[in-house]
Each structure stands twice: as C-alpha cells, then as structure tokens.
Image (cartoon, rainbow, N blue to C red; front, side, top):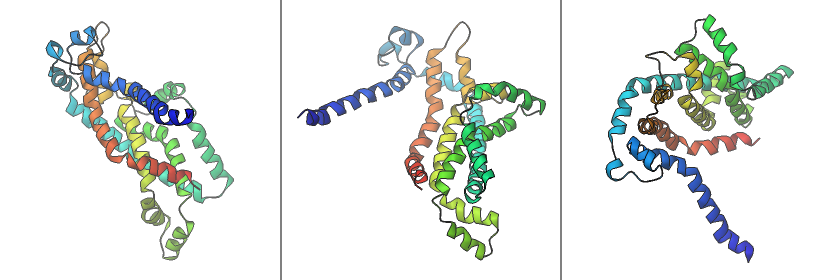
Length: 275
C-alpha cells in the first residue's frame, strides 16, 4: 500500500519539486530580462508587468554587446576549435584502439589522466609560454582549446571505436585503401553518433567559456560574447537588467543548436559504452 502510494504520488511530487528548483534560475533570468533596474530590485520573483516591463533592455544589450561582431568571434572560435578537436581526437582514438602495444595503453591513460588536471594549475605557465611564442591571439586560443578538449573527446571516441568490426578495415585494405582512406572513408562515417556528442559537449563548453579568452584575447575587436558580458558589471555599478537581457540573447544560439542535436547525445554515449 505504501509502495503504491509512493509510486503514484510521492515520486511524481518529488520530481515536480526538483524540476521547479532546476528551472527557477531560468525563470529568474528570463523574467527579469524584461524588467527595469528598479523592477528587479523591487521584486526579483515577480512577473514583468506594469511600469516595470520594458523591451529596451534587449535593444540596449544588443547594442552594447556589439552582438554581430561578438557573435562572429564566438562562432569562428567555437566552430574552428570543435572541427580540430573532432578530426585529431578521432584519429588519435582510432590509432590507440587499433595499435595493440604498451605504448598505446600508456598514451591512453595519459589522456585519461589529463582530465584530472585543473586548468587553474597550468594557466599561468601556459599563458607565459604562448606569449613567448606570439600566440596570444585567436589562433593560439583555438590551439589551446584543441589541447584541453582532446582528452575527453579521445575517451569518448575510444569506447565507440571498439564496437567497429576490424574486418571492415581489413576488407578496405584488401581493396587497396591506404591508412588515411580507411579512416576517412570507412571508419569516420561510422562515428557520426559519437561525433555529434563530441561536438555538442565541446561547442557548449567553448561557447560559454570566459576564463581562457579573458587571458588570451581580451583585446578590442577579438571579444567573444562572454567577454562582452563582463562589461555590464562595473566596479561601482551593475547593469543587471542589461546583463540578463544579454544573457538571454547569448543563450539563444546554443539552446537552438542543443535542441536540434540532443537526441544524438544518449545514442552516442550508450553505444560507446558497450563493448
């Protein structure tokens, strides 16, 4: 009796409460993006009605963000970094899977261990080295994203590639394909589910990243959207109404992309976890 009551009433109620808790920050951001500064300070949780409602926040935020230029910078860096991560991580994972040596095992565990190293512990030496090489620019930033994003991507690809029959590659070798052709025309097309997963994870991370661009490309004309958002928060004043409107504008592209591609996440991860 108690189990039936818990299953019918208790768990749905708990799920509803947790859902409200998780969605409440989104409500706060979206609702207050339509309020004046005074309306936000008057009642954060209230709906944007009456004298506190305004659409000017979005117009001003769009202008102050220099959204077109910032969006282009974010898009260029995100897409370039993700393409390089996909290409190099998939090739590295394929060779690690197909090369049965102690060295390949050691390299795999090195990539796995690299995920445990906090970025904050290496950022100052990294910036110092990249500065000496003259790579404190968007090109250097893409190169650094390739390094930081490869470990997780290789792990995901590694598990997925184990499910691909090696007989396909042997047949391609008999037909006269070289190593590059085997990977590009036989293996890589089969990696579509996990490639979409890798793309989603890296795009969401790079698009929203603030710290690394702040250290590398914090110069006029190179600012990404997260960097531009920082200027809504001054030393003595904070433009919460514009910041929240700008945050909604910045979220729209990545949310649209996520909803289009989200069905591939579970498929890619589950297929990669089965040996």
